[in-house]
Amino acid sequence: MTAVNKKEQKIGTLQWAEPLDKDSVKEKLEKVVLVRLVLPEDDESKLKSDLQELAFLTRTAGGLVLGTVIQKRKKPDPAYLIGEGKARFLRDLLAKTKTSTVIFDNELKPGQLRNLQRIFGDHIKILDRSALILDIFATHARTPEAKIQVKLAQLEYLLPRLSGMWRHLERQYGTIGVRGPGEKQLEMDRRTIRRQISVLRQKLKKVEIERRIQRKRRTKLFRISIVGYTNSGKTLLLNRLAGARSYVANKLFSTLDALTRRISDGEKVALITDTVGFIQKIPHHLIESFKSTLAETREADLLLIIADASHEAVDEHIKVVNQVLDEISAPDENQRLLVMNKVDLLAPDELSWLRRKYPTAMFVSALTGTGIDALKEYIFARIGEKNAR
Image 1: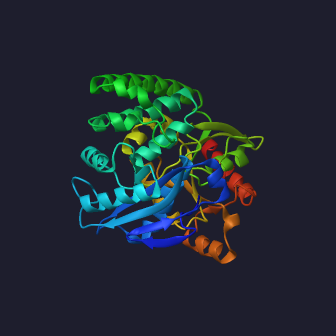
Image 2 (image 1 turned 135 degrees about the vertical axis):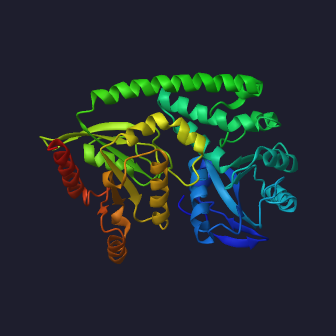
Image 3 (image 1 turned 180 degrees about the vertical axis):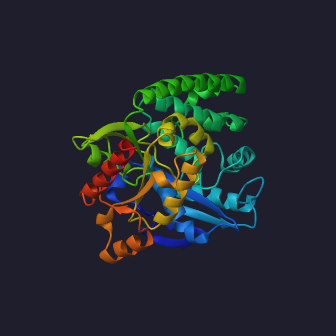
């Protein structure tokens, strides 16, 4: 779902969208209303892309976005985030549209979550952006390591929100926000959750030690990490470069596990790793949980930063990726190469404009193969430079 507005009309302060196509009806998707609080310091030019991204996240999780409520305030309401009056308006709107799930683009504090739940009632599921991302991660975790990382992040998110949430957690209708630890947490108290967090951290430490040993065995090989905004085509590019057949889907966070493949030109050899995608406002505890996976990025000889050249927010996506890389102490600019992917979706004038704006980037299409040979030549030239030292 690349956009939420197929048919729009104003309903109060609600931007209403009804993408009720045949596929949506067949899938019986969970109806969702999105909410965004806009503050004076927010960049309103990014509002559309932010909400489109939240809609895409919702669709990935199995939801159908009916509309978006946008509330402007000078500062967040400490009790209800959007204000008590707007919360009651939203409650009535959910009842009229028979919508059972509301997702906030803003982070909800525990007290705000409890107060909103009291107004909406126990039959309404309330999530914020972080909870939605964690839910998607829970569905896409495949390996034992990824499952540990996701469950740890979920429990750390849940711990400060325990009070008054048990009735909210025991609801099992729909799909969004109920995966992962789920109903088993009903019997957990804070001490039990803290104990589980401790156990999971110990397991991750063991994983990190195992990964460190594996990396030491590969120190002589040139190592490449593919990083980038989620859904930018990283895994498809890995498949192109390495002749692999890793899972690819037009969904956010379809790949969570670090996938490593070997590439060679017959003489030079390198290991190339695809990592979890980044996103705006990614929960900090999620980055912490995935540090063992992101260690591959920190120790790489070359970082390929993949960007979707066709996306209207590509500049912001590149900025977000570099911010996360700086946060995890990834290699500096000399070891980073910007790769503009999906050039097959660009008009000639758009491509020319991007080439002028990003003169040091390489422009490719992982789908059609455009520019892949030139990218391989660059990679093997870098390998040759390292071997010559």
